[in-house]
Image (cartoon, rainbow, N blue to C red; front, side):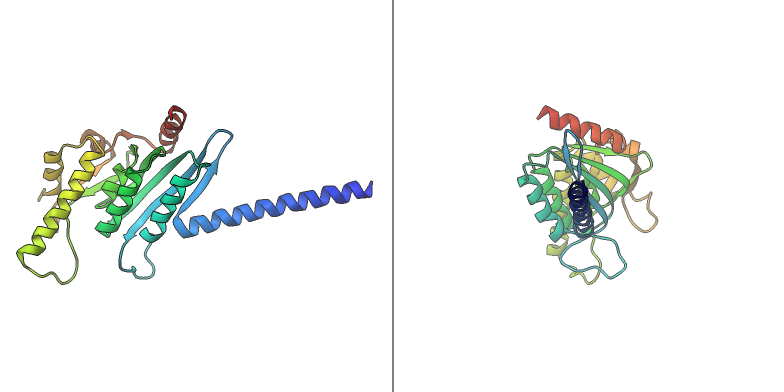
Amino acid sequence: MKNREDKRTNENDGENEEINERKLTEQDLIGESGGVVAKNSEHTIHCLSIIGQIEGHYILPDGQKATKYEHILPTLVSIEQDEEIDGVLILVNTMGGDVEAGLAIAEVIASMRKPTVSVVLGGGHSIGVPLAVSGKRSFIVPSATMTIHPVRINGLVVGVPQTFTYFNEMQKRIINFICAHSRADKEKLYELMMRPDMMATDVGSIIEGREAVEYGIIDEVGGLDRALEALREMIEGK
């Protein structure tokens, strides 16, 4: 009798240790890449967070929330290669940041074969717009906003034609990406980008969730429930 109890105790200890290790692994994953793998009886979904400011070639000051592209890019490659992961849910709440880093992340997400669904929560500003449309389906909650403005840079700028040509070409790349992965009209998008009357010290537009859908930038107004439902449908359809 005692041997059975000891065996049961050892089994319980082993299970508890395995659960604790799994929890620790999930916490490490959230801390490193802002993501977690969520499983149920049918599907395994990787939830990826794009929050704060997109950190690019330069490290942001302490105290700022940041999405590090050197963490996100290899994570996306790992997800694409992992046969156990059925789809990706991308939670977007970003103020923007490094244009090239943000566009690089968006390009990788857009080129993935696995089902991908994005949800804008809070904000999808600046380079966050391409990130929001990079999934195969995109959603936005009614209270979220998106800021659309021209490419800009802080610090010393050499005021020569080549500099402005570079900005213009980068801006075209962003517009082309958004239009290629949404129903947005190129001329309307450029008009929103160059509006002079909405922002006090800048040009551009701030649009709310339903407006983003009306302009064809985002597919649908909806939150986590609709996004997960759409992702499950895509997984089962695949």
